[in-house]
Image 1: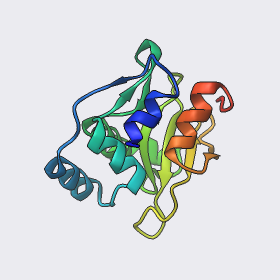
Image 2: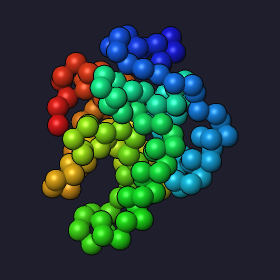
Image 3: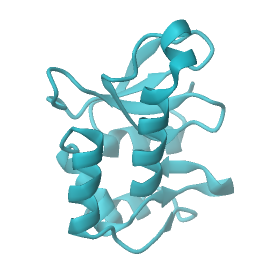
Length: 145
């Protein structure tokens, strides 16, 4: 069963869009300097972003993934106040300023684990073993931030 269908079964209010093209995915990986993890890439090939109730970015569009990650990495003020964002690949937000990410280790995303960055205290905490589980737990209330 396509991942998009499995995600749709989690909540009937989820909205999908047209898929991201292979060319756009390749360009994004080049711009970000890291290969997207398989599950996130699969979601993006089936829907360029996943939107929840009230417009919540459950999985951002590829354009936003690139734009926000590059902006965080380039912000000089963040570099003075917060830990580095070079090791993070943000792909979603909690709607309160906190953001979900994959960890980049030695230039690669080596595990599919999902973490959350707390925008108030700059902490980074493990929240799920993969993107689908993050979505499931986020939508059923198991995961809260």
